Image (cartoon, rainbow, N blue to C red; front, side):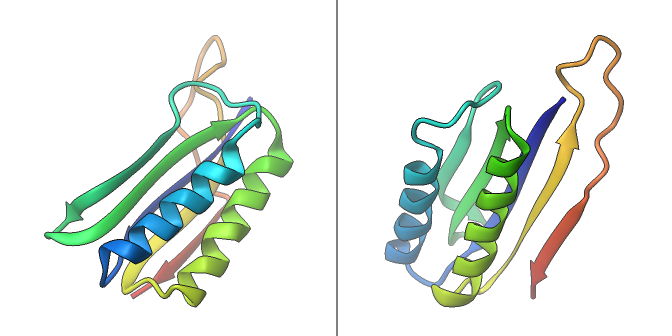
Length: 108
């Protein structure tokens, strides 16, 4: 089992996107990851400065800590609109089943 954090965030300035992306990059440095870590920036969501994250960890504590970091920064930066979620991920199992979110925070 692996542990996944996903986020889709929309900001009002590119500088805020860069701050979030750098915080995620700094957090995952040296962590045990599984698969490709996605921390994409640009005008992903309706031409707004955006950040999309999809990262799977080997350790559950890392998932929880990244979820909390993103959720906290969604308020402090602030995010115009977006969500962050976490879930145990079974993509590494012999017979993978669909993931079920364990927690999701939404800002509308």
